[in-house]
Image 1 (cartoon, rainbow, N blue to C red):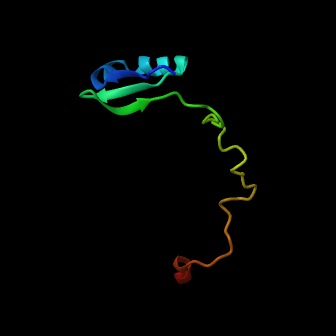
Image 2 (image 1 turned 135 degrees about the vertical axis):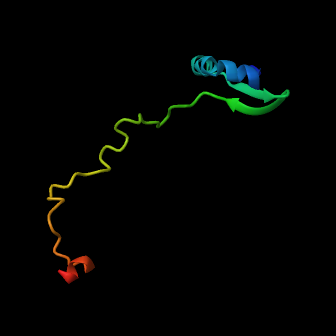
Image 3 (image 1 turned 90 degrees about the vertical axis):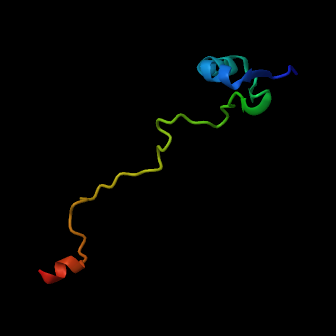
Amino acid sequence: MARARQVGAGEFKATCLRLMDEVEETGQEIIITKRNRPVAKLAPVKDEGLRPFIGRSRGMISASREDLLAPIGEDWEVDADL
């Protein structure tokens, strides 16, 4: 297995989006260093089981067919003085 590429924090900051594309395309991790000390790892995400954001809650929320503004038949303390 090839050794992970190391990138300084300054270079990472300047080229972050390009490096993210590179990791996605190649699948190779990049180690981000600060003062030559590893501090973070940029790694590809395995999309096993990931669902897109749009439509994620489909089937979890149901619409009510009842009149949402109709009285519920309960007396409230505010109505007691009327």
